[in-house]
Length: 51
Image 1 (cartoon, rainbow, N blue to C red):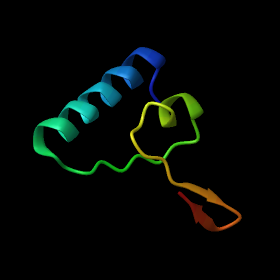
Image 2: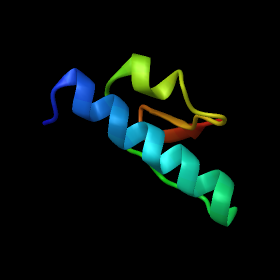
Image 3: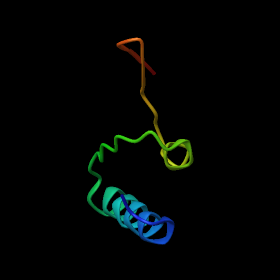
């Protein structure tokens, strides 16, 4: 687990890498604040993917 400041820094770096290299980045999290920052969210509910 990262503290809030380091977590924000890591997410920022991943988003920059996504933009720079046009690569998909997969992030698995239970944190709704982090998920809300992403361009696309796929949730798993009762074993099913919800797009």
